[in-house]
Length: 313
Picture 1 (cartoon, rainbow, N blue to C red):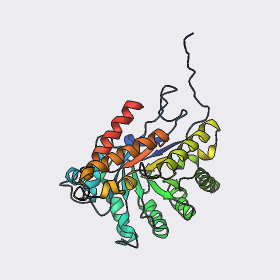
Picture 2: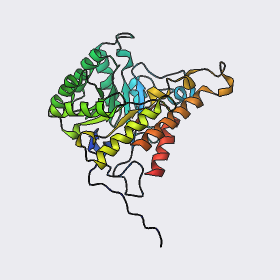
Picture 3: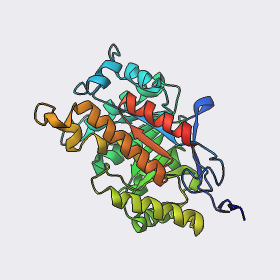
Picture 4: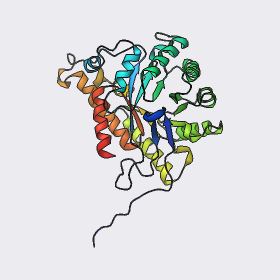
């Protein structure tokens, strides 16, 4: 007797969250099958790809990145070129320079940078803070105001500052936020519950459940992604049905394989190729695990993952 496979389609589904406005707005989530299980059902929305840029300009230490942005003068021009990379769906502005332990750029200066970026692109904008809890809270409050009407996604709201971030970004200015937890399904669910108890609707926030570069404790990320998606679909757990965004670039380009020079370890080959390989392999892995959006940096990584998504979804 011939084998007849029954598609596994769930009555539960991942929430849909829209970022950006107009024709190039991006919808995250919507799946009611396991990741890449297109044999069970067609994906409602494809995995979205973001391109990360920095408030301080282009990373000239990576030749391919420097070459791509060559001639782009100012953050607005850089953002526009980022949005034009084949496969890019949104631009991610990382306000690394706002870190009090670094350049300590003022909130006003960062707001001006964000406004310039938003005015230069026609695709959705995602804002990453400087990872300092107090400064990020101040930044997100001000940027939510100056970017009102842009439907921006702010990455991220954490246990220490979610009330302040959610109140300013979502409740006051109708923006979107990402709930960030540290690679633990229970922590992810707990933060989602806390945010929902503020009256924030499921269509207003996504999850960032944490990440790690492939080979660097990635098994914990894989396990968390699998458990989150399984609970969301198989158990219909409403507190784990938010779309997942994963910042890949910051992890992939910070490990030794992407940092050590070819002169120091010639047998490893060119540093840039290693960084791209790390970024692509990590992004492919989190997509297979259930990420609805990934944040990348190198143009070749963006193009490669875009082709992968097109082929598999």
